[in-house]
Image (cartoon, rainbow, N blue to C red; front, side, top):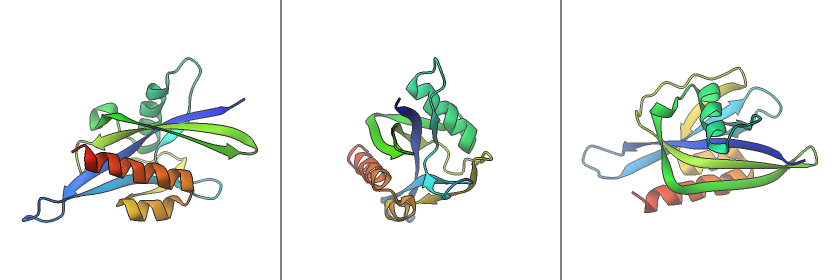
Length: 147
């Protein structure tokens, strides 16, 4: 049986300077309070009868305290990652979502012990897993080319 989870790669933008039209993009990563304390976007297992996107919204609210009104899901980006957990394949599907309010409060669940906002290079270093690094890099590329 394949394990299945869904989540959102949440990002926010801010201007790099008053005179600059450049915008910096930061990604939200959460540090787990269990296992190897790895860093990941909010995600979780699909409940029976629940569709994938609904799972992503529910898990984002449960793990980071962000409700669907706090972000906008970008059309055209959906990333599927497959890796092994305890010798079983696991599929994780991510959508890309932009935070509407730069200063929105993050409220962690007991599943996580810390969070941070990082640019793509810092996020990739912290994420550690190649599949997650590729997803973050692709998300950054998608945001940059679809302004």
